[in-house]
Image (cartoon, rainbow, N blue to C red; front, side, top):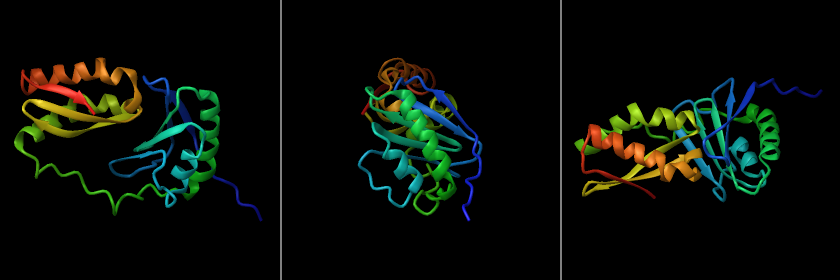
Length: 188
């Protein structure tokens, strides 16, 4: 007897990155935090992610709450990538466990961070991250020293043309207004 895959509601939305698409589902794909995977990374323990990464041209898969963001090579046909991704999500989602990172993902604790980094993280959480996450991306601080902040863009933000221009200038402006007028922000 053949079992039927439960229906999943999937809405596809563009992001500011012309090579990234958000697949918004009617159920969570991740219960806590965020997770990102890039081409070549071993994901055999995650059938949904592994199948998405096998779509020709897919470079990155980013998960956040009920959103899967796919970033693909610029020369791939977006409609083809979307159709294949929809099919993969519909068939592989029943095998996916949204708590897969519970053991490996540590609760984000910033208690160990210096006071200046905690303040920067709080400002970014309040002002910048909601917009980036709404567009299928995020950022991580990699280093802060000598008034220089280095950030790593994730998900759709990773290859978005505006991440190194307008978005970066906005982040720098907000941090100059709310934290330190001398701060400079650099992408890595």
